[in-house]
Length: 259
Image 1: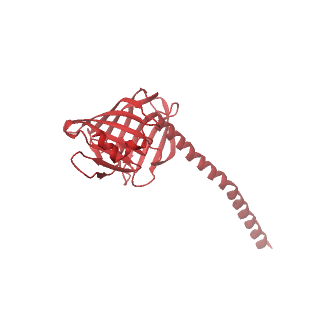
Image 2: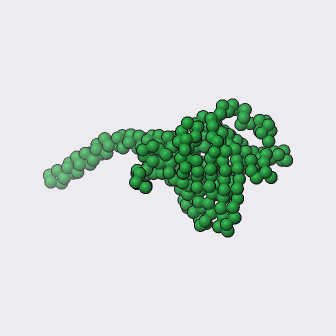
Image 3: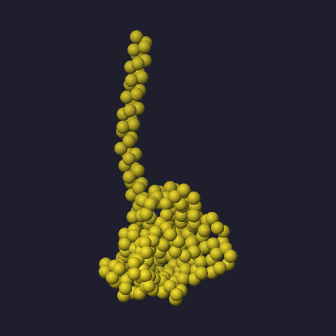
């Protein structure tokens, strides 16, 4: 009799925990979905501050410093429409003027005046200094990364969201990114970029906020090598303006007019 009673109690307890688990599971799943949506909304607002969602043009001056005190200076003009169409024109040095990079979706090519066929490039390949091709060719993080809100962190007396961005596939610029976004105004503060082996490659700070193209945006990015001390690149954004850029601008045929 006692054995039967213990068995009944055990069954009732098991059934209680099973029912409780079933009752909690949908709520947990809903919270997780809402959390992902919230992280995506934070990332989208930070992206809108970094660059316009519509077509735009901007000049980018890059000064790269090496550990041996060598300084490399370059100038680019970027035409971008959304996150899928970008043209990057080299303006300086004069010896490379006429070279143009074209990005369609995540495919990137460089067109050179004296070479008949374009050369395929990777977004993660080095462009100059600490700057990868994708740092100029890809305007936004949204679409390339799945965001997750890790925590809220106080930096300089201001609360910041810390987002973990995981690459949607191997074709994007970085495997993983940590992004700090101001909780009050959604301005990005800094980012950390990680390799496939989850090793910190470089850091970036977003500085010099000024009004460009109708929005307060960072006008200077400072990218520092996390593996080689003293090596860093300064990206200064100037003359940003909104432009109506038809799809034909982002074609091989149209690039011949720009060279």
